Image 1 (cartoon, rainbow, N blue to C red):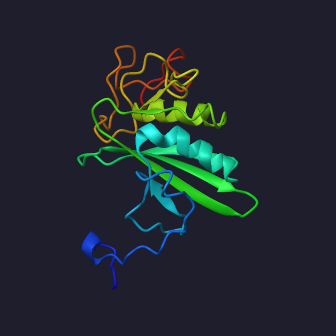
Image 2: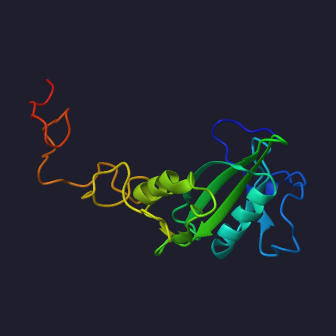
Length: 189
């Protein structure tokens, strides 16, 4: 199969994913399944129900995946489930990565926080909350981390206005290089 720059891949035409190593016990986690999408980098990827993410993260940590790398999200608007929360872990001894994905609906997306298992997830979960609006249940300090506290909306959602919200204190023809409280400069000529 060849692909040119303008082509899109039809899922039925995609080659079947390579068999995924058994990194998660199927008997213990029957609802966890390998991702149907082939990973470009070869990382084993699993779809995990939101209610089981903390238990699966604890299992991975006990199985040698002691390095939590990051968590991010993907907005698949207009598809449902709309969001995927994507976790990356690494087993340093075996030099083995693993990726977990949690699928969430577009209406009030939430997932349990894994900060009780991996403390390093704290700021990553706050970033996903701030930019995508996904709530991490039982998070110790869930608040914005990049955007101002009074910011409206979540800028990485696909339905977020491309020009951003209109802010009454910053008309569109003014530029404030030092932030909202800095001096106003005339528009560039």
